[in-house]
Image 1: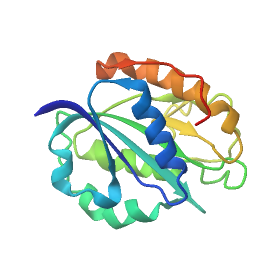
Image 2 (image 1 turned 180 degrees about the vertical axis):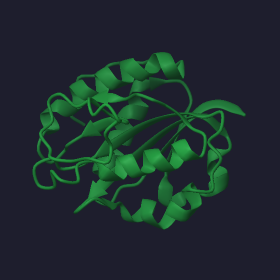
Image 3 (image 1 turned 90 degrees about the vertical axis):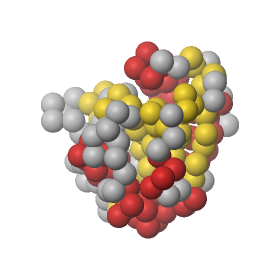
Image 4 (image 1 turned 30 degrees about the vertical axis):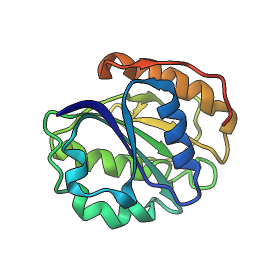
Length: 180
């Protein structure tokens, strides 16, 4: 098994892809960036460390490329793999469904043996409901970003989250002050 990281994402409007690139630019070492539309079940086999990015669409829907891959992701064996998750959503426009796709993806891969790292506190967000909440409801199952309502928070949140997961993933990260 390779020592590099697989970063898989799905993106319609480019926001999740942009975040994936920003994450990859901060990680020192080998990282492969894979659009989920180009992935197969076998694509995950080469990685023991995985980062998954998924946006939530409309009323709690899964992004289209992830939706097309949904049956496949449920067949991937994540046993022995450490996974960090990030998700995008709109907490004001869709506050009843904030980051729901992130929570749904989390549930699928945990049931397939993944070890999840990178839970993220809910402080600083305003939403009514989310499938991405941990049972204690004080953390999301991964990093939550809102490029629609809080884009000014993204760099700070990315830097803090990457520092947090760097220990669990045994990676080195370079914090950046960017908006790209």
